[in-house]
Length: 308
Image (cartoon, rainbow, N blue to C red):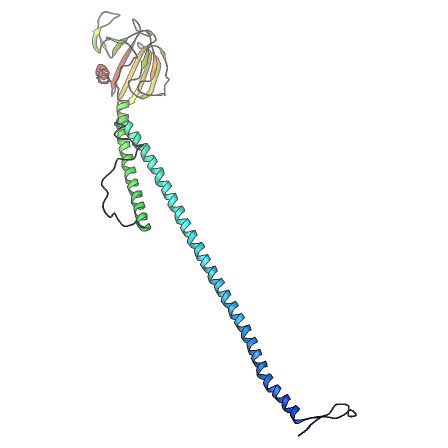
């Protein structure tokens, strides 16, 4: 069998293909088709594998980003917890400082031994170590202990505040109770009660005590209070009068000079004036009176109470 190939130009030569040529061409085509198909399949497989790898890489990158975000969130949460604990710890520390200051104040008010109640040192503790010990503390246990400590501090702070109030009240009562010698120096020259009047020579009631001394000697408040009189008064000369509350009033008369004014708050032992001989007086001294609910009482027992 022969194959005739015709060209478009019919005037050219006619080519004849032999059987062998045709067979060879068909064989080559048969062999090339699978190779081409295989190459195409390979190319498609390679492209699909690359795409799978890219998808896998994208998935891994996404998972890694999620893990990083989880770690960041965990770190942020942990930092917030640490910040909260730090703030709470600072609050507890400040409250401990206040309690120490309050303890020091109570030690002073109650006149306690500082060596026994030292708020600047760690409390003395001790004891033998137990074999094996206890399990490691967990965060939850720590938080429970933290809350317990806070509650104890609340309770102790309230108790100490009440105790301080009671001690301060007692101390205030002691401070405003008339007790003490009303002059820096001097001696009792006339007592309370009936006496011979130094001007008339007749018996007369003396409503206070006289303490003689050197001109200009300082006159002292025997208790804390408020000045309700400071100036001249008939018979008393230059006088200071103090209201101490609880019905107590004291008077300091015949002064050469007053050092306080009406409305002044004075403390126990504060200077009120200088000893003189103003008013109805025979020489430098201070006339000292104590009134209880408007009635004069013997000042000697209040002077002796302080000195005893």
